Image (tube, helix red, strand yellow):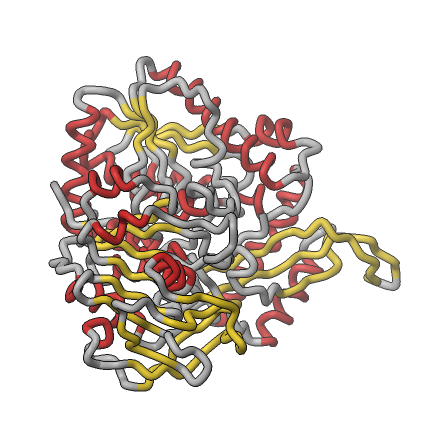
Length: 513
């Protein structure tokens, strides 16, 4: 099925993925691509619109990212955001320079409601600014459509050529009417109809998988998390018994989680799947011995996953396809074009060059986390499974800072179980995006029973997020945190200190490594 599309050209902005996320909220499919994408490729993709992201550079700098001037002559509507707006101005004869006064944070912006971009937007609206440079003078054929007391060109447009630019960030939630502006762009400027819906995604994906697989055998990497569970059910609906789900217990799961996964997907579960559980704890611990670098740990875990699947595949006989629950944030965060690599994901960056399968199928590769959940509900998965707490592929390997050992796994499993239990008992878990205990590599002096101790510090994490691209630390009641601290120190051997992580994303990540 041919679907309408808006593409985001990434100039190194920290919010690039959010732009795609917000456009999809408008039921319009959107992908992120590097700014180096060729004009030929853009023509081939035939997008309904293009969005330029922000970025850390100055457009007038010698090595700053840019694009071909041909892009403005394609007749495709373009929206420039922050750096993208300055780039549009710079390339079309405007003047960009260092602003006398930088703007950061929530700012009142006066907008011109005669612009299609600002239809039904308040004449004075709160927007998120984050810039040192500004457009001092708009290009001759552009008109200014928004300003602040210190930013003369907060927005501009050439409506005839369908070129629009905003200095602020409409994609972040701090811009109160940002989604309305993006909706105006995709519907009223680009002429989109909004054909990106979960029911059509599920239906189309099942048909595509069926066609691709034919009578081949499929092996699914099942972790029991939301992503792999949705991928598994999607595949089972497409190819039925041609699918074998292999659950690798790498010894880095939450407490009792291996048994819980087996209860749901195993022979006694409700799904018609071929299910194999592989207990490979010792194998993974041996490979991880002495490793402290987070990227190396991720690569090791990813590679071992593949090796285990190869071995299981050989036992099963001929296997043509490997299925993974990779989702779009994994792809973006593992590096897109010239964007900075935030962290590699085991099911993206950790894949070895040689894989003993015909092809890897990643049916959720284009979806954000909340879209995966909607797909799960569309597939008829029970809500408790769909809304299960996210868990990273490398498991506790990225919640143990430094070397992974069996004893450290025991510590973090026990601490995490206590934390989760107490949050649930108090009701403080409601509305949280993700919460867990992690083990730091810090040891410190303590006093327990009149004796000196020298043990580890556990860090508690709880965040509120809608899309897992940005997140804020949750305000857990102090009495709950105190109770958790008491229990962990009293019940978990090897811990004498408990901390609460207040860091938002960005600048931090949700996980520790």
